[in-house]
Length: 202
Image 1 (cartoon, helix red, strand yellow):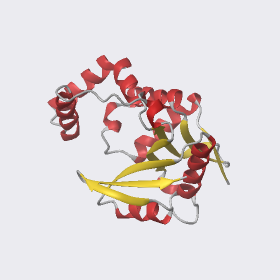
Image 2: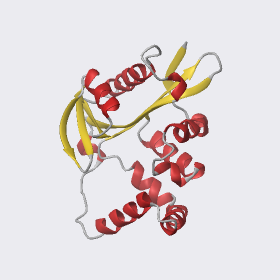
Image 3: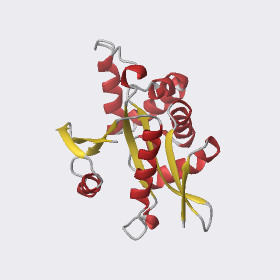
C-alpha cells in the first residue's frame, strides 16, 4: 500500500507541500515555498537522513521523516546561502509583529555575543537528531502505521551509517507525540523552554 524510500531532490517541491499542510502555523512555513525548498535541499545534500512515504495508488508523497547528524552545518549553510532572502522575509514578518520571527531575530542577535561553538560534525559522528515526522491528516492513525514505518526506516538508515543514537525535541504539551515516542522506545531525558528532549539508542 505504501512505499518507504530515501528522498531525492526532485521530490523536494512535493515534500514542501506536505510540510505546509502539516505545519501550517510553524515558523518555517512562514518563510514561503522557495526558501523551504532550499532548506530541505541543503539538509538532503549534506546529511541525507531523509525518508519519504508514498501511496502506491497515486504515487504521491504522504509523509516524510527527516533528521541530521549532530553537529551538522546544513542549517548554517542554508542561512548563509539565502542570507538576503531570509533577511527580507524576516523584516516583513517582524513588521507584521509575527512573534516567531521576532523571537528568531532576538536569538540571532544574542548569539553574536556568545562564544563560538567549536564542535564539528566529525566530533558527533555517532549521533543524530530527528527533526520532524510529517504525515498528511488522511493517512494518520494506527490502521495505516505510517508514523511507525517512517521511524523504522529512518532508524535503519542511521544503523547503516553507524549512528549509535539519536535525539529529538518536541513541545512538552504535545501529549500525542510524546506518547508515540515513548511507545517507540525513546526516553525523555530533559525538559526546558517548553520542550521535552528524548533519546533512543539504535
